Image: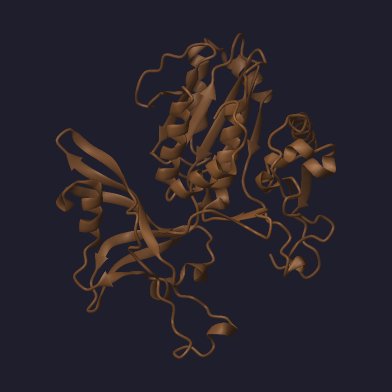
Length: 398
């Protein structure tokens, strides 16, 4: 991937692979391994060298990669994204029903509930399995339609098209076939283990559709999990293009978990993953507390997540003074309440970075012009970074 032109097809592969946060992390770790990054398990002792390339994971669902600074540490540049997406979490493998094979689910994150109805679904995540050497994690995602959440037909709900209030415990429960089917046994066979050896699991429903181009000229694309695997992949690609030329600066790429439910977990952005890694790096370099504070003050973190473009059918839902145009460049978010913490200073720094990147040739294929590829055509601030003020115009519903 290093020194390679950005490829929309590779982005599609990453989106298709990331059917759960665990699969997203495994896909990212595989890319890092291919690029020569050394795995540093959190429970192991680390031997770090100046200029070295490393990564670590937490919970199997978050990953942080870094390049060691050369010379005296002066600061860090980091890009952060997240591995999880809105979905349905399986609470219980198999539940009693007189007609169907079922498993109880609960909502995870802020999804549009009816978009999950009447479509082929599979199950993805990890099984925690008892083995002779202890408990092991096994990733699973059967490559076939295992489930469906059936909609209520129009004959039984004449007001269906006039708006419906969904009860997730009733309306959004999936079926896995006829009575007698056993999801636990199917997943055990997929993982090559015995069902009785599965001690627990972290499983979600996953859509089966692949990422595809759309539009008369293929200028857009559609996929599940764009939030936030699009940003995760593009920032990873950018991180791997870095040359580490700035003396004393370290580079970090991190993909946290659980952003969709508040980031407060051990593997989330409010956890200690980044702080713990920085502390271990600084200790290996013999950095004093004062040097650490100075370096962190001289650092910049880019929080990379998706933003809403102005809706073609509902432009009134967006700020008319700051329209966000599809294909118009990278979006910067501002908010007076500091929901987004972009300031004049960080906005200026990011704009300068974008203008510098715009001098580089990325790809001449118009079909490749997703957010990061558009930077090559960025002669001005207006084209490089669209401003998205989260101010609410009259009639805007929060």
